[in-house]
Image (tube, rainbow, N blue to C red; front, side, top):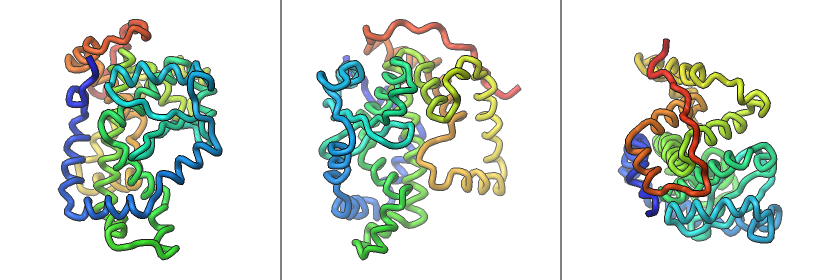
Length: 290
């Protein structure tokens, strides 16, 4: 039985997407964005500067992908090893690709890499890829560059406007939580994803076993009261403005909270993955700050 997105979608993903899609200029902005950008250029860069992985090219890495796609009921995307920062990404609207940096391949254990690929496949399952590409274009300044070069404005300009950008980035952050849930369900535990996130955040590999996850989650709980006053909400908004991913501590807190739910456990039973051993019971984490 393939994983169903309705079984794992994060409530914030659903609500922020509804608010985003209620903005009247969104659909014209999408059409203008697709006209202005070319995924063929992005794919050309991957094909010419990266390695396309397959049965004869890094088969140990490529072999992690097909079972995930089968469990999620999605078509298999192309998988590339690419240059760049220590991260992974999914792009393309007609030809979907997952790119994993060489540094990430080097730093992650197999189970952590499997968790990261499952996270990226979660974006595909949830139909996140188009809006994610738009958010990445905003975050990287691609659209601003188009204006300087005399590119199309109109609806694309509305995409770069304050309200549209804020709505798109808020959804982008929320969507990561859904993709995290997909990875947790597939792996049967939040731990491989969490340790991968710690490494991506810069925690040295040899230090990972000594990280106190209870204290890390307490950091996320400490951040929550910032939304209690108008001034603190403005501070929180300033911290997150332009960010396409949620804060590390918050992602870890959400990961363990979801893993403990009956919904997660039911989804795990439904797609029981024979290639992943049953995990040890995760640590008991606090529900509130001490």
